[in-house]
Amino acid sequence: MNYIFISPHFPRTYWRFCDRLKNHGINVLGIGDAPYGELEEALKAALTEYYRVDSLEDYEQVFRAVAFFSFKYGKIDWIESMNEYWLELDARLRTDFNVSTGIRHDRIRFIKEKSLMKRLYLEAGIPTARQHVVSTREAGRAFLAEVGYPVIIKPDVGVGATNTWKLESDADLDRFYDQLPSAPYVMEEFIQGEICSYDAITDSRCLPLFESMTVWPPVMDIVVKDLDLMYYTCPEVPEKLRELGRRTVKAFGVDRRFVHLEFFRLTKARQGLGEVGDFVALEVNMRPAGGYTTDMMDFAHSTDVYQIYADMVAFDARKLEESPIHRYCVYASRKDGHSYAHSHAEIMGKYGAALVMQEEMPPMNWPQMGRYMYTARLESLEEAQAFIRFVQGA
Image (cartoon, rainbow, N blue to C red; front, side):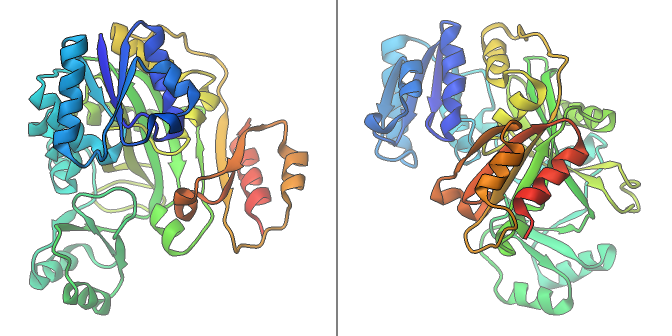
């Protein structure tokens, strides 16, 4: 079997996907823009061959790389990047090389455009916030007459909180339309709730081989308000979220993928959507959660999600038995320019035995993920919250 991994060096822990695939006898063929000498040794050892291109943005270069691998190794069975930014590239390559595993180019819009995601949610009867595709100022005011302030404005195609605004008044609305971006945007009713993700690895029948839940803060606030990031992976998936997550997977026809589906868990009842504690769909992401979240899933569930994914690719089944040991795995970071009550030494002294990761993050991640991070495995939510307070408290 030939598996092409686009940009296998980012995030850096994704070498584990390559390693587990290799252990099943799969040819893992990397295509990236990083020089071979800069790849981590573990990644080099996991790759059958690596083809460097000057830019992954240049489709002709990447096409030639896939064609070279196809000529040398035979039919390509998989093409994946596990990265939101390259999903469209992946889909176009699958279409051009007739790769049947994964999303083809004719379906990519439904997982990239938030307005089309909304249509599939509604068709499947999955509760989701009302939305308006931004057009005229008058149409925007008509939508606001239905849902009221505040509303969230975000790109129809976009990742994270980039170019996202919260409008709370007519003055905010006018400022937005006075500088209306040329790219398509959507306007969405504001939901009061915490963000919970349903993370899963699915088989060819869209059935989950692995399921997990992670609770997230509003990423927009982290960046705009320069806050410290904290989030945690839970030991169990609530039944309500499990049911909605599985329905979403079916609605989007998500087979043989690692997915990250975002929901709101309501902290205030919303007419037409649900009561406090109910889940409301936010958006789908057809790739694993970012950062070190895949590793946090491993620590929370005492498992190896990289192995489960490789088992799915090789056997369309899960071979790794589920562990009975489940914990909270919590991430807490610090930023430059913030004051903290406890030193690094104090954190290590109090939580050293519980820490599973702690390191300085790459500079490109500092605005969202902080400069220095601590990740701990803990028994209860109360312990997780106390850990966050200790690391980030001023």
